[in-house]
Length: 402
Image (cartoon, rainbow, N blue to C red; front, side, top):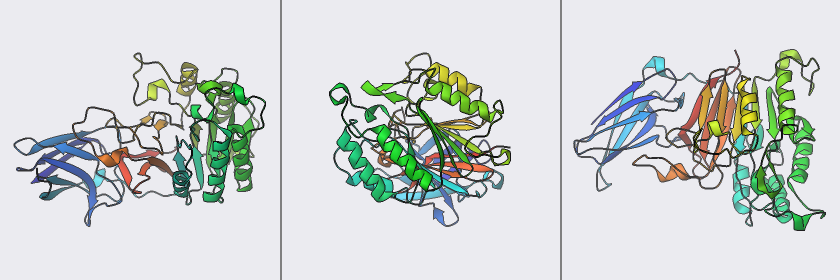
């Protein structure tokens, strides 16, 4: 059995992986080192082998090579699923990833869909206990009902009492028909967010809410801008004179067009990464839709995209799709100027769409995303909420501001 790899650029898994394993049916690929397969990561490929035992996998999408990895291991299995064999190939030294300095850990979750049972949500929240900040990208509950938000608040307080949490709403955070509830004193997203904001400020987060539908917060050297892109009747929309105007003002300040300082910033303390939160992805960066062939989820999509195209150094985080980060093409785009778009899947089971002949069951598991931020580099790590393992197909590294 033999494995040959042809990587294309340092620190990146893109390239060709060729396997020759006569007598075997299929093979999985894993990151590994001198001690063996990295057990904290799942496989990143599942490859059918021909009658001659040969198979080829082309990795693309800009996934990073974990710094712990110094080799790739192929594990081939025969038709009985009882016989297997492994072969490894060394990653050239110049292509390995350096160790990362870690200053801040942010946990990102989306599409929680609390309905009746709170046990699952408590478990999900417990995975963020070691984070410096937890961000929720909408669909906190399933039907936008008062009792669901009340239960959500209790779960949050029980599981993450010492961790600041911020959120933007999704379409399911509003009832399908809000009219019967009009005028009632009831729990809703804005009430829950007010509680989050007060608690976050008590835990040291600098925060400013905007009445047009959004917020801006500082957590260490990271800035977070949240956009309320959902409203009653489950509409997904950003208004030109509302959320878009608010975002434009915040981005203009970054360019120095407004001299006043906000949130107590000093020039030398500008954040090294700007996170923009919105429940729905933009059409140009939606893993399951094609520009020119699909309609956008979000009203105001074109105006928001135009605004972001004029910016640099941001990470746009979205949910809504429930798509797995293990999609072949990936769910993160890193564009020139540090324009980064990430669709983070769901804490409910995720969907795998595509034409790969073989996929793994674990690639569909509920997921959370970790942002590991350092002074010079950052990592995006998608992690299974079932096993805790990291998904190599959801692992990305990028340089921060120069």
